[in-house]
Length: 456
Image 1 (cartoon, rainbow, N blue to C red):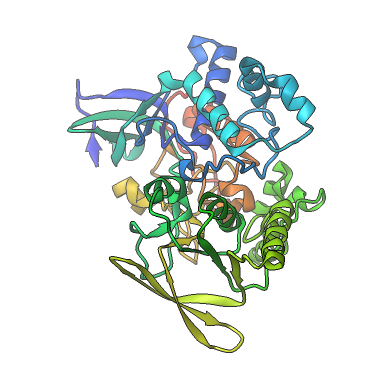
Image 2 (cartoon, helix red, strand yellow):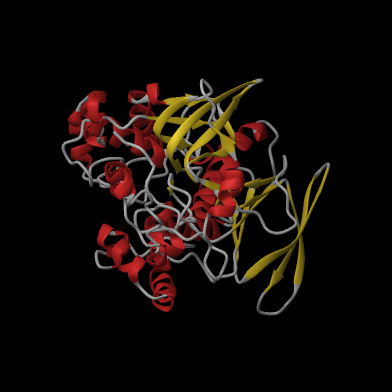
């Protein structure tokens, strides 16, 4: 463990953020608003590191006609502070589109537009972030027998910087999930690669493209490729009879409410599992009904005209994928009959979703001081703070990877504004407690021991 020496102390912050996607942009905005309200003496100091050279959020899926699946009111700030100058409505006003958007009578903006809103908000707090900096290590700082700070080392090119943090907030996002044994390449894509890879296909006149998956991204890929390559056959492969519609009804959407996080967190594990089973169709492997109907209408039209380019290979799975210089040779197996059909394609796109990045390996020695549950998952308190051994006085907060403790909104935008407010409140209250902080590892809140220092 790092030992502090005189004159050896790096820049110290109350909070250092790793990653600067929408969640940590929202965190930076919450900090900016808090500091403006309380003044310099009580300000929470912070800095963020982002490996990308500029802000970017699923750029490969910014299809020009794709819309958000979440209301614009669930932006970076509105549910926490409806009067915020960082809201989507303030962004629209600044762009001269507020009245046009109101007249549109739609809760769901274009994804391209919401990404532009995120960029706009990130630019307003860009003094708080170092882009192009990859965090390579986190080292514990030992004082008086406890870990009071964390030294965060970030690399930019051949240079490294070290910032010391009383608290960490980790928002490293999601990682594309591929089937076991399948590697992304020039002809084998994940949906996150779509727009980048599509550009490379321009002028090649592909004859067949295969999309694997039954969720929103899969359906969007099918629709986009069908439109983009008017001479190509687009094959959708999935194990269902057809795409299933997302349940976005009012009662079902209560699973995304802030109060539902409290309910989920305090529920027994058996009830947690049941809630995920009951309400998985609000988010997982489901498609907006309008898109389903558009695809069906297009497929039927082609059948009538005898020009079928949309093929839906349902109740089937892709069981073999082999790339060669001329394309990809695949095998499609019927789940009903077991019959296997060879299918050659120019490209195979896997819409197989994402998984949260495990934050602990990044923490080095500190990872061994973080508690896990019986299933090996990170234990997290209601305030999103990782439960650690009592000797760790600094706080480690997670933005994502908490679905097992906080429910379905863990990696979604729905609760982002509320979540960052709760994390900030926890940081401030623990800092104010100082030597008198309290906590019980047994109840999942973590040990709020002495020595963390002021968070103001």
